[in-house]
Image (tube, rainbow over all chains, first blue to last red; front, side, top):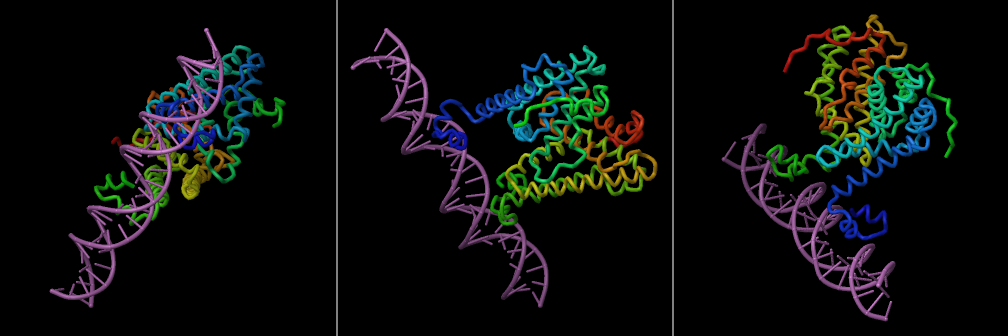
Length: 176
Length: 176
DNA sequence: TAGACTATTGGCTGCCAATTCAATAGTGTG
DNA sequence: CACACTATTGAATTGGCAGCCAATAGTCTA
């Protein structure tokens, strides 16, 4: 609470006034952050693009150093979940929402013929496991192993019956 | 320190006496735990088995509920690494040791013809990413998604040029 | 057995964090 | 402007935890 107060240039008591306990603060903070990040990764505004394009952008953003903190956020939340049932619940919810959103894209891609899989949700889960695996290393100093660099793309392409490279380089995204 | 002392039926001061700071205690505890668990997952005593058999047992143990706490251990350590440079270092070291040990098995398997890959280390890294991804969920209440159940096996088989199922059911391990 | 060395205790100190609450400042509305 | 309501502060309370140290108990050896 102290650190939140400091970051806002405000006194700790004020934080307590708006959030009964840290547990509540933590849950709302995570929910809010995770939701915002999800919108940034998979913007509703892009819903009318081809599914292949949507997924490509999603994976590209995941790999972007700009989203390094997202990995840390989830790592943090998943660890804290251990002794915080409420947070655990929220984490599970956010996981489900993300999974459903990404599965919808894949399912749509199967419909349009972009992707080939007989189980969109399982394909989605596999992709997410790899993402979470790579997120595990968010707090590492050392350079990432070369084998991890394009891993999400490779796995996603395999899962969705795309040719090698079928999700890479096809998009032209803005630089920051 | 209090909780460690309690667990040992001893007074907190004693812990301070043997471990200068919490940071040191944490690092040594993690190093010790990670090392022991690695020995249990990939016992040196099995070094003379076929590489396929060694890997199969390793993956089977990873999936075993007996090793649920191992996932929690790594999750915890990876999170705490964020603001603890020393622990971060140890985590990186332990990661390397595990990677090297598993890579050695794979490399040997390539030599004997058990496995097919032109880059044993990369294959190893991919397998470890999936393991770490699944470990992310160690603190989840809910039932694991069906797509995750055999995922490590499937991925390992693909990475190592084995037929589907080539790492499953081949071993007869003791029940606990 | 004496003496040295180790293991362990008990208690103290200081720090920092969460939470509460009464008091004050600020804002908008009739 | 007066009043009600909201936002914010300051200070106090509580509790826990790391780190330190002097005192005591235990152990081993010459």
